[in-house]
Structure formats: C-alpha cells, structure tokens
Length: 309
Ligand SMILES: N[C@@H](CCC(=O)N[C@@H](CS)C(=O)NCC(=O)O)C(=O)O
Image (tube, rainbow, N blue to C red; front, top):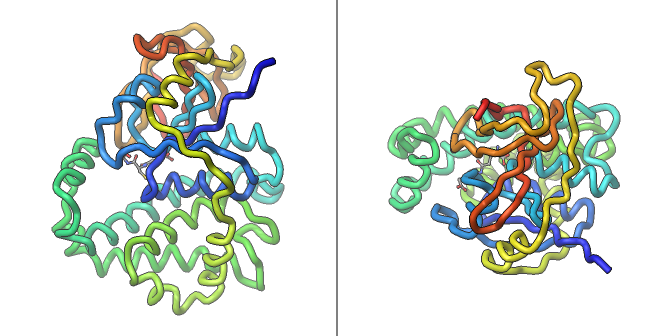
C-alpha cells in the first residue's frame, strides 16, 4: 500500500505570500504540513530541494517542489478543484491580478511598512534583502516616501472597494476567488505590521467588512515538521511528474532540453535542470541533487525566464 506524500509548505509566519497559500488551505479545507523556515538565508535544508530558488513560500509534495505562489496555487487547484479559486467570470483575470497585487500594490505596502518601522528593522534583514534584490534596501528613502506610499496604498484599496460595490461579498461577485486572495495579501501584511490600516480603511467600509470575511477563512489544520524531516521526505521520494510536451511552445522547447529557470525581477538565482513538462503557465525541470537525489522543480511561466543551460 502506498501512502500519499503530505502537502508541505515551507514558509515563515510573517510572510505575506505564504499567507495567500495558508488561506487557500483554509478555503479548500486542505490538511497540510507546516515547515517553518528562517526569515533570512541560509536555508540549508531547503536549497537542495529547490536548487537555489530562495523566495518564500515553497510547496513540497514528495520530491516535487513547487516554487512561487502562482505555481503553488495552480497545483493546489488541480489537486483540490472545489471550491474553485477561478469562478467562470474571472477565470483568466483571477491569475492576472497577481501582476497588480504582487508588484505595484506589494511594493507600496513594503515601502510603507519598512519606511514606518525604520530603525526597528534588523541590520541582518536589510543585508539579506539587499542581496535578494541586488539593490539597496533603502529604509531612509522609504521613510521619506511614506506620504506617497500612503497615497498609493489608498488608491489600490479603492480598487478593491470598487469591486465590492452593490453589496457584493467578494471581488468577483458572490464567490470568493483568487482575486480576493491576491489583493488581501497586502491588506493582511499592513494589518500585521502597522496600525495605520484602520485610518486608511475608514472611508472604505465595504473593504473593512471584506477584510473580516477574508480573515475568517482561516488556515485549516496543519501539522508541523522540521526542515530536516522535510528534506528526508524529498530524499526518500521519487518525483511523480509525468512527461508532457507542449506542441505550441513558441521556442520549440521540449522534454529533455537542458535549461536554467529564474525569476525576472528579484532573487534571480538560476535553477538548472532538464525539462520534464511545459505549458503556457508551467515548466517542470528535473535535477539530480547530491543530497536529495532526483527532484522535479516546478515554476510558473509569467514573470520567469527560461534560458538554454
Ligand atoms: N513571486 C513570488 C514572490 C515571493 C516573495 O517575494 N516572497 C518574499 C517573502 S513573503 C521573499 O521571498 N522574501 C525573501 C525570502 O524569503 O528569502 C511568489 O509569488 O511566491
């Protein structure tokens, strides 16, 4: 008898991108396994699985490793289709909202938070995030820009509020969707860090009520294991991904091709491997790691570069 490997999330409590996934576990009522990783590098038990990809969160199912929330969400929806995150009216747009919520909206949230926390931000954290970004994590500039960031955050909040007009409970109508999860990430991040959110929400009562509904979704039930135990699971397991060619790949890529995959914005560490499966929204590559043995690492396509290795 074979038992299904657990759904493991490598995350840390303060991580807003991880909060998206924790809420999806809540929404779909998925029992999951929690692996708490450090907020800054090094993460010696995780890197052998991802091949160097260092952003948070990462999902692990046996020896299949899913990087980036886009990719994690796609896999969770495939395995647990009900309730869907993609109601008919916003099937494509629901995913596309990440290009708003995770970039411009997130940037204003990050700047507002770190600019306000100012000298409370530990030096090791600043050094780590400078390495991640390959640019200065300029707290003084963020502090100077607080009024502008409040304006930006407010403009994004108003877009959420406009979607909740006419008494709608959720951004795409009467069903919660990925649009809500994506947008809420920023509201959650500000809420957990600064009291200013109450002031900003005062003019948006529908969004304030929506925030409470979002929070009430919860995180379902989880069991905690150590980073070492998760690594052991990957080492013992074999990847379950089936080879899948993409007849429409515009660059003629195919299973077996050696490639390097990396984010196009920050944390641009290339992960090398051979293509196993690919499509317009997904690429899976096989790597042989000296510690874990064979693993398949999965990435989204939007926002990621695929280069010949
Ligand atoms: N596009 C990524 C972004 C993830 C991201 O930026 N996460 C932050 C933490 S919430 C991060 O990676 N910080 C650096 C780190 O944890 O090493 C995703 O959707 O997963």
